[in-house]
Image (cartoon, rainbow, N blue to C red; front, side, top):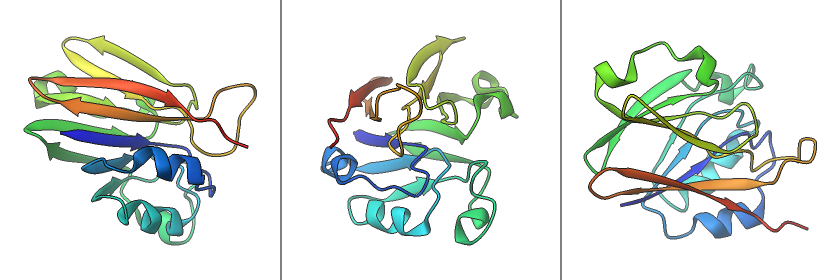
Length: 152
C-alpha cells in the first residue's frame, strides 16, 4: 500500500504537491491545513485522514481533530501535529508510525520499534527549508521517504 503524507500547507495547495501525490491509496495531512479547500483537493486524489495544527484555530479547519489514529494496510498510524504533544505511548498502543508536522523539517527516525515521520512542509517556504511531501509504503512493516518538490 502506498500512502501520501503532507503537512503544513498553511493555506497553499501547491499543484506540484497534488501531482506528486497522484496514485497514492490514502493521504495523511498532519495539520496546519490553513484552508478547508485543501482537504477537498486532496480527497479528489484519495481517501484522507487529517488533523488540525496550531494555525487551524478558526473556521472549518478548527473542527478537525487534534489527533487521530487510522489503520492502513494492517498498520496503525497516529497523527499529531507537533511530536512534542504526543499524548500516548505509541509502542504500547501498537502504533507502527507516528506522523507529525509543525517543524517544517522532514525527518524519519525509529524509537522503540516505532517510526516517527515528519514529511516536512508543502506550503509556503520557511527559511531555506525545502518544500516536501512524504510517502509511506506498507508491506511487511512501514517505510517512509521524502520527496523534495521543484516549485516555481
